[in-house]
Length: 113
Image 1: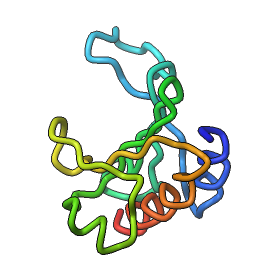
Image 2: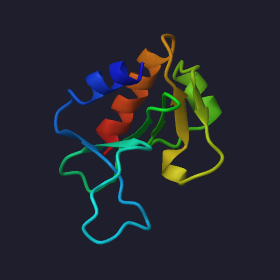
Image 3: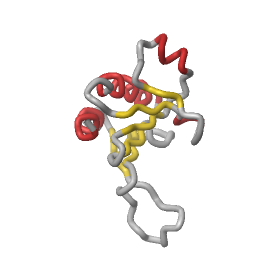
């Protein structure tokens, strides 16, 4: 499901896949792609619209909906996180059943950035 999600999301206009700069990284050290991938719309002043974790096959999205708002949208596979940056509070575990909802939410986050 991880690769299916990436295949679709990176096909959207101007989407780049980025690693992260570790806090303890030395000057000139390359980006780290081992923990998660950051999907970002090129030219956007915002950070990534989605953070994709291969190891646990989940994504965190730049969305801050409540559980009630997600339910009203017909989204049943997402959950609201109580920790981490407020802008990235929606998480989805990627499964056969959740892939379409994850892509739908990722598109909303992409369009908002």
